[in-house]
Length: 471
Ligand SMILES: Cc1cc2nc3c(=O)[nH]c(=O)nc-3n(C[C@H](O)[C@H](O)[C@H](O)COP(=O)(O)OP(=O)(O)OC[C@H]3O[C@@H](n4cnc5c(N)ncnc54)[C@H](O)[C@@H]3O)c2cc1C
Image 1: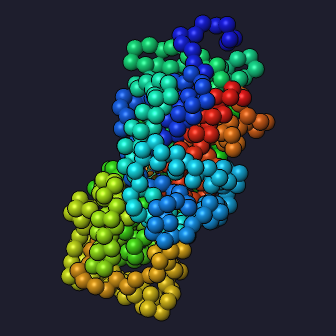
Image 2 (image 1 turned 180 degrees about the horizontal axis):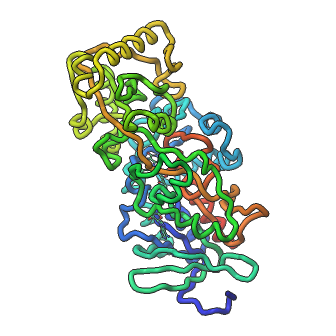
Image 3 (image 1 turned 45 degrees about the horizontal axis):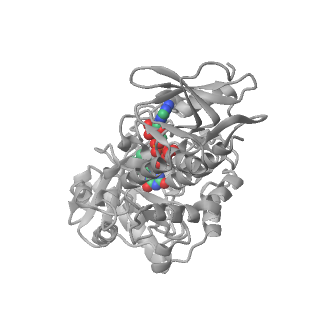
């Protein structure tokens, strides 16, 4: 293939994927003066993971936190990201995120993204820093801003291949729309922002046979296309060994509306034998792995009226700015309908089909531990990561939320440098950039809540700027 060969259309920057990373890349590329096109495989704006996620983004040092009296900083966020990633993450990528996260928060706010007046504590956080906005609204705003700067966003257009020149530089893509296969030239660069591979059974099975048949709640386009296209060019993959499902989805559920993180407010999690099996304050991805070894893969959150009241209050506080179904740290009417409720722990055990004596002993043991200041079974010290004091489960009525693990993300993939260039063992693939869930190396061994949408936006912006320079 040479640059003289026939092209069906020509742009400076071609972006694959119209989720958070792709649209952020398009805004920056267009802003830098590049003629930019975004190709989206799915037909509708609401089909990306960014559009359907629950809307929590990890930012540190914001005005919302200041008004709530929370002291936080980029440096604390950096330390937390490395700690939760067990230092398996690439420090320069983590630094690139923490250096640009606050600027990205302001960038979004200036474009019209509205934030709820709450900062929630979730996985991996030493400060409450989960900021909530309406995710679909955010995607609409990003698309509008990309188009306002002159970018073209086209749906039902799948990028199916990368075209290289004789020096292995990526100079264009193959794209399939409803009717045709076309060749689209990218004069300066291609950005892969196609999301993860939670809907690629082959790739999941190759990582862990227990992942076969598990539910996926990601955008339906998450079939690992970027990896499939870049690997033949020598792209290196990172973090594949850390791919984990998330524990949090109701056993009957298949969307974010049935995700519930009430264990970060103090619930314990028991298996079908009525026994705890994990420290409930650890990241939900690690709980997800632990739950795979439990009977039927089920873990039941067990809590009392005090915790119930806090969860309802969380929903009330956040729902001025975001749909109540997105408040995963709370309980809305739909989640409350999924609860099993009872006046005593024994009746609750009957309701969820676990042995009465086991569940009663489990709760008593946990409460004794809380009273004595130590969870003797699993060493839980806080509600979530290093935040919040443990609370006894003692105030009736009692509640149970039966949940399982599912894939809402994969968080592993193409190795990139901090300019988002796709790396090979010998260097990088010229003309090729990647951002968002399609990359590996940022999260490391586990997951800090809110950092996935965060990195899609922060790294998407970097990828767009770099691609526009044609480096
Ligand atoms: C239910 C749920 C809840 C979540 N909650 C949170 C949360 O609260 N906080 C958080 O930080 N993260 C959360 N996540 C994860 C987070 O939403 C994603 O990791 C992040 O949005 C990924 O952004 P992205 O731009 O990489 O991918 P996406 O937003 O999915 O965009 C990728 C796009 O590429 C398209 N595509 C795929 N292949 C092709 C191709 N060949 N050609 C063209 N287009 C293609 C896809 O259709 C998709 O639209 C959640 C995810 C889910 C599913």
